[in-house]
Image (cartoon, rainbow, N blue to C red; front, side, top):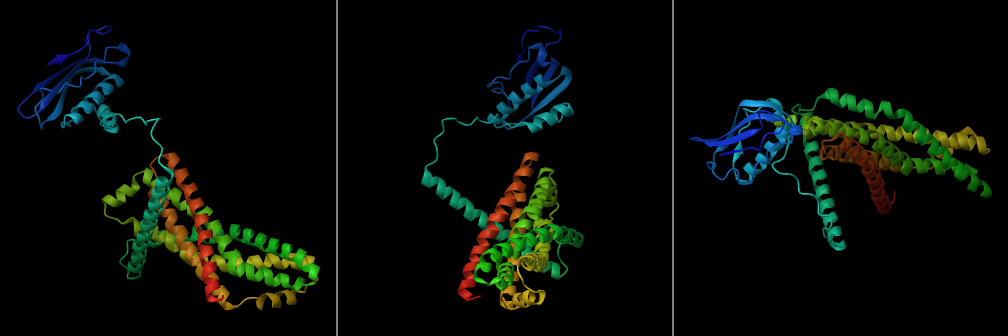
Length: 383
């Protein structure tokens, strides 16, 4: 069977011919396949009606001349017809650039979205969002369990986690964050002291500024502000790094080699935050109290010893332990959600930015939501 339009500019117009052999269908391509000539044929929808069933379509390109995207367009038509006929393509004899381009193309053009598609009803949309959220919670929980199991194996020396990765992540999440954590907590403590001094001075109770700053920093502000900083700084970096690896197909390579991402990538990231967050919380408490001290001493007639005594007596060790536990939970949450968002990201450069932004937003909102839960628990426990 043969087909081909009349030549217009070339002596060797594009030609194709399908021959059926013993166990294969051989498609012979010849002539010049240049799109600018305007005589590139289109493979007909019934072009394989005489092909042998359950046999691959192979190519003979010995007489193939110059070619460009015109040949690729013809082969894409052929690929679609082959797919619809339930056959397969053997493209090994095609020129390597053609093979690479053809492998990138789908079996058929994507169906454009229907602009008049019916909108999902409101309640159905809420139900879909709820199910998707619950599914995501389940996936993150499963990821957390796998990571915890990897941590247990690490204690036994049987984990695939590299300790050099743990040290690198710990350095990024801890010492490298001291400056920003210190500046923010210092300003928060100073603002609390300033607001408290303005109001408490009216009642000649300026000494209680120390209690206000101390309790606020220990119970809430140091843990929450530090977690928000880490969600924006470290959580976004985790999501961007893992989504970049996803785009470079490094995650696929790990899966092919049987290396679990939960222990190789996620465990050092989560563990570094769990280890560093409590220390950053204590650091934030001290720096916040220092900020309150500077403002209180400069605005009020409070002695250094009086401020220190009032601060120490304002809160108990139970509130310190409570804030300590909160910071650990915040660290685990930020690490797990950031890594999960990086793993589910797309493979383009734009998806890296989207994943980083999403990790920051989810981290901040999640930290505040968890803090609200802790507030209820603290009230129930009488802390």
